[in-house]
Length: 304
Image (cartoon, rainbow, N blue to C red):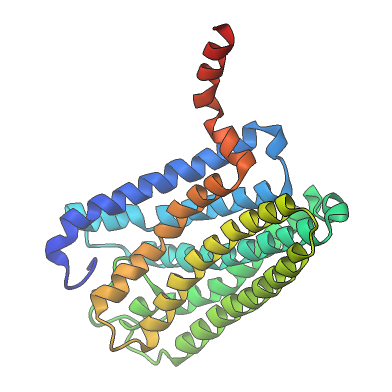
């Protein structure tokens, strides 16, 4: 249905949605290309950032083209298998992204609290194992969720009051007892987000305590700047995600169009802002991104 209650505004809402999606595509692809091209960025922090960029591309691309099709071309239909696949990508890769954010918090903890052993702890092999663990955990938790949904009987209404195939929006269409789906969905999401949030909070508490003990004011400012960008990314990801997840189950007093609009932005705003935040806050990355634009000026100045 898109955003129920705002059908008259769909056409115009598609323009900012499309703009944010294009920014997300350009920003995340730029990060991947810059890190791949520049050897000085072949560090754990940037490898994790590339993982985050890939996940953001998957999350936004799995939903936004269909949303734009609904808004601009009234393409409201979707096959059941395609719906389940979309659900798998949304919930599965959201869980994987949560694990990558936890890995990034651990990376900053080691870099600031134990810098002398940073390269020996976070080797290329260790980074690959951490990335695989985050992927397997996220997909492992969310695969049963989509399997349970696909085996429910659907013989009644087939209209999803949402812009994409969100888990609970599809489950509500089933003509059977959906209690196991509800319990598993809440348990899996709470476990993944809850455990990751706790470990991330502990990591940054230890980081802030270590930063306060640094003797150099410049080192403290650099550490605060890097950690500040990470915390912004984490808040941007978790806040709308938790709001959307729990509102779908218990937020009956919140208007449907408000909830669904925010759920749409949850899959658009983090992928759009993540590369911008890291590009602004990370000096090495910012320099490499701007290098092609500054190089002609530097050549002209040297010739003069």
